[in-house]
Length: 400
Ligand code: FEO
Image 1: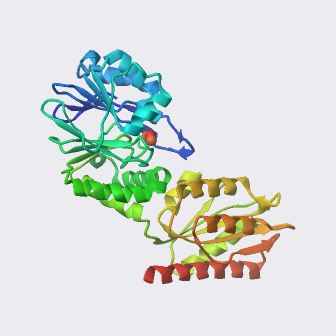
Image 2: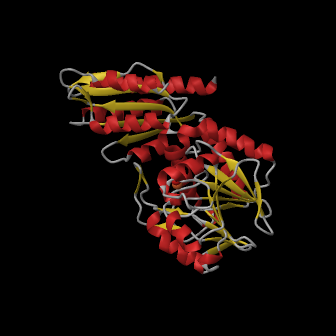
Image 3: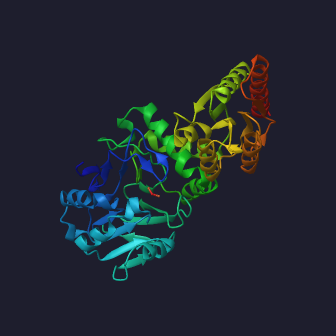
């Protein structure tokens, strides 16, 4: 993709990675991603963020459409994770910048990633203002949103917040703005991104939303480092959405996720889902044979109830369920009612293992159900009753 002017003399010069499908365990199917970088043409021409190393050539090509690389005076490193700094060594060599700005933790992490002893690194923080000519840049450290080095850059005159990973989506597109694409898909990807990347840092997110409000920064455009840029009404919409996501208020929704060996746990899952529906709770029934764990998290993060099933396998749970529980635990979802279920042949430990792990995540656990070998009609009735019990508990919680 070529450079695109997103505001007067401010250019998107990043890269679209149409083919990326995995992001440290987060499945990007089917949308790929973008690595956004921004060039501010001014007395001190400034590049904010770079791209993944394999797209360094693309970034340089896009910069060249606006200025010669040697005319880049400053580089701002909002975040050192390699999808945004991988191209930095090549960029530094090509541009020979006068200064490279980063957060205090950014300095530390850059030194851990790169041989950068000769780079003109300079630390900036919340009290720093840098003039680049017609514009002033301010900075907001956003530690643990989502790395210790993370920060945002605010371009005062353009009311532009370059927000690093926050407010992004993994969404490869030729369009640059959120209002140019299908809105249902946009919001689905925005929520899925939050659930799989930002969720563990929800407390920090709320604090940063508060800080941005207190700073009194007028924000007319939010430019994340992945996906589409927010402008117009989209700015308030995404700020509101992040507030909602971060508060993790439970919705009237349940996710029944499971894996099965010989369809017994699968039939139990179906009966439990029926019970939830009878209690008036919409359900997502998700087999781990066909749903990736990041798709499941996209549904779990705002669900009020999570019901996890596994056949007992080698005295434990099936590998897909073990992986799902590990992934879920790392993302620290809050405010859930939980229960466990599953079939077994002789020892039946799965229920105990799942229950313990969900309790460790802080879920309010309701006693689950296990069935020996294949569920008969009366067992499925018990499963449906479990669904109703969870559904009624969720309804009572939402009403209270
Ligand atoms: Fe998109 Fe934390 O890197």
